[in-house]
Length: 129
Image (cartoon, rainbow, N blue to C red; front, side, top):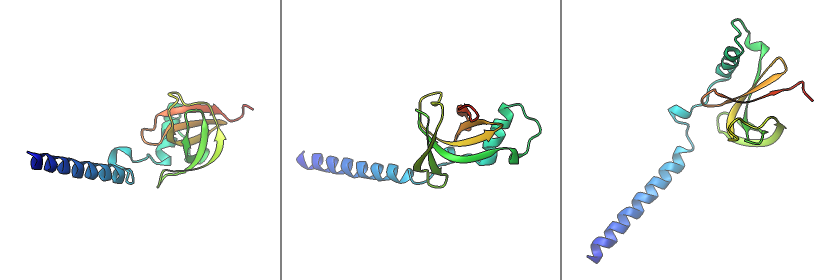
């Protein structure tokens, strides 16, 4: 009976280690469902939200950022999802959650879109003080 218990504990421990390393490894590679949208897709979402039928992507600015729930904006890299230095401040997010996001500017307004879903999570008016 003691031998069966030791084998069961060993198998459980090995399984736990495999699951742990599997989860750690999965964080390094974006999956199909969490691949970030492109800058062009983010601009398209904003244009659609503004009911623009004819627009040029040159009329928009975009950059990939990390947006904290309190409105702090950090530089970010779309390829690694690394978080860099604080680069600005905006309105808190609608859910107060933090996001890797696209910052899309158009006509003195800035829209922050969830980097994966394209949902607008915060807006601000850059001409207001």
